[in-house]
Length: 318
Image (cartoon, rainbow, N blue to C red; front, side, top):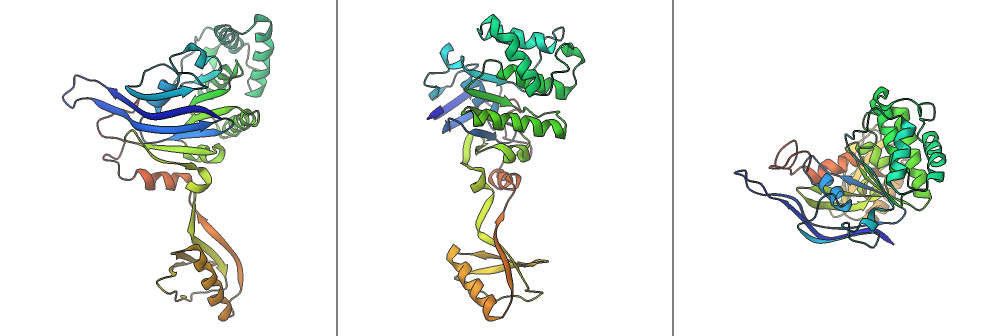
């Protein structure tokens, strides 16, 4: 079942500046499924924040269809089971962590009798149980992110929207937050994750959409984005020998410390390589598809950006 469906979504910001209107989203179509962690990636100005704001009913699309849990985002019912952690959030500094969670629970319409127990549970989940009675003004950036995640979870949401959830969090905290997200997914809930830390997204997301200039450049699973099925790393006693491969099959692109790397026209070409090595009595120990990092795949897809920092004519907050 799809938790979120976008069809031909367009968002244009009208300005009085000389450069004219800004198209933040341009015919974006995608589905986010129940029980998955979905990563939203793109350079500054790609439209990620705008997309999330539309899903939350904070801003309206110019054209296109948006459905969140069966309802349009303008319907308050679509947000009853949504949790949200915005980027650069600001919570009332005079409140304690416990006080913030109790306030968030009341704002979500939770029964008063259930709020305190849920708040105590979440403080433990995010590693803040010892700081629940401390005022927020004394929290570090990492503690602010942890308590922010807790408030996003207070109403036990079916859809959790997180904008840069690990920003400012130490390495141990990042692992703990990742474990929380995996638990949420195991409960059949959905997470929409917007982060510039591609290694973090790679470690936890099931699928990602890569946005560039307001369009979806690629929508795929992380495993597909990080594998090159036609490049293989072969561990074998090749030494410094170069293996001749017919052009119609592929080519050897490198001699490595442990063997060789080949690029094939079709995956069946690996059989020719194996036969060739065996005929030369070369021991073969392993054959593995070459994997990219999500960061490498990301930069390959967006390298045609018109400016180094992002989409020309848009700002980082779009």
